[in-house]
Length: 495
Image 1: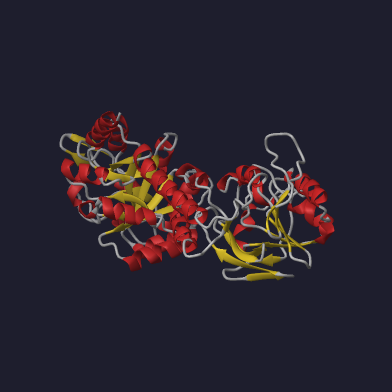
Image 2: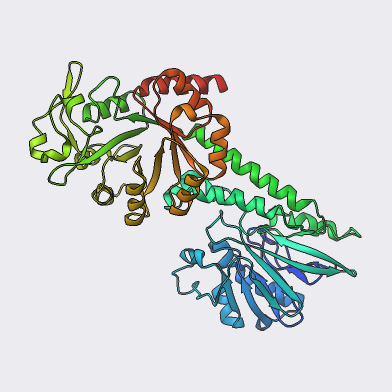
């Protein structure tokens, strides 16, 4: 294989060396970069962090390569640990840069680090230079624009297929990371679908997108004493893919327990007048970490919290919310036994509840509610704490168009593959099935597609336990105290 060139003595440095055929490692432990000598110029795969550029330059020099011979710089995705050194290397080489258009959002605004891509890569594109053809496959998940690369290498008269999974990291697919950055949970489903696609590719030489993925350092050290090249091993690719798949599924299962949302349905509506501040506050007191409520519009266009199409059941009054102005509705009372409270404006609810460390599920009950609800959520800067739901799919789709940044869930009486496919296209990443249809097998299937699973229609404690035990991510209940107690019981039993 030849001798590696040790270019540094700190723990992040591995050294520069030839891996297989005309493929060389020129990166660091934290940020892999690979160089391909095509005979008609050099191709660089990823550039690491900003500081990695100097490591790459030193590595190339030690290996006898000139930065001015780099013709193409191809990026697996847009994160800074793969693009940070590009601007400096482009300035020195004049190389063309390649990336997927979906990852433009990640490119730095820092003038010292920014670059303008020359080519947007699409699924199935083949990048050719000299004796090398690189097949580019879209494998979204880690980012929306992640690309994986495949090309041939020749060593000792034999041809080997090299491959790299462009984004195998799962920490960036955990709920807090995605929600904090306004990214869809559907990326998790895309990640698992990408793994299934990559399993169909034969790979003899697994190239780590990060050095620990293929044990770059360990295999280099083996190469110094081994007669056979340790980087050539057609079992590592599939083993890594299966490990990545199981890691993602494990994260989703664990999060369904550690981040389960006990939504007080219209507040603690079994004990207090529904959709009132009294009911919401009681739900919090009983251990809910989420509040679910419903929105209608008054005659004068004010969003208020009310479930039914008519006033009769909970107020005893005639007509509907849409028949009255908000000021007229103020004289009515929502009643539960001996308790009564006022009809609440959505704005008052947000003002009173938004400081709490919990999630809010706001259901659109009527046409025309999407825009005023979104405007209030934005006004109170609650984009990261609200999920918009509805049984009215068309109204939910209007919300997708008007406020794409808001999380959304569809309250489905029947779940079909056609429905799920359309939800994925529109970016609706929470499926809300009726509780009696929720099983462990169904939840895993929905999780594999990337959906958050929150059940509705929990009528009794047995159904409540069924949904929780099936691994759902949340449910709406009229009795949040009973659900909180059951969760504590399950956690105690698991210890």
